[in-house]
Length: 135
Image (cartoon, rainbow, N blue to C red; front, side, top):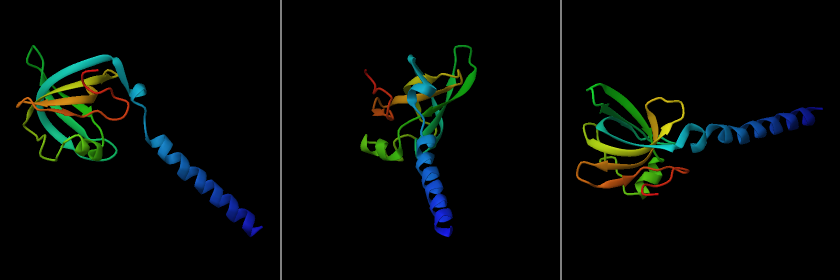
């Protein structure tokens, strides 16, 4: 009887642990709309190098002068490092241009595909599922 209870617990915990990573990751196509590419220019206010994706935020001024803080999701820190990013590549205060795909929910949030610095240097920011810039 004890063996049977232990076996049920082990199987239950195994199923739970297997399911957690599947639920934790989200699909690009579910959250972002590939038919709505955008280009946004603004000043970086914050950047977070955290797994599973980096996040960065820009203050973007519209034609009437109203400022909106946009959020962007990029690839993982490891993937960005492979694309030439360092922690000093983008800093708060930098003026950048971001090519991205808008969030389906209409909020000022998007999946970044590339980021262009004021110097003209372009960095890929695309995570899995996000088409790279120029495609």
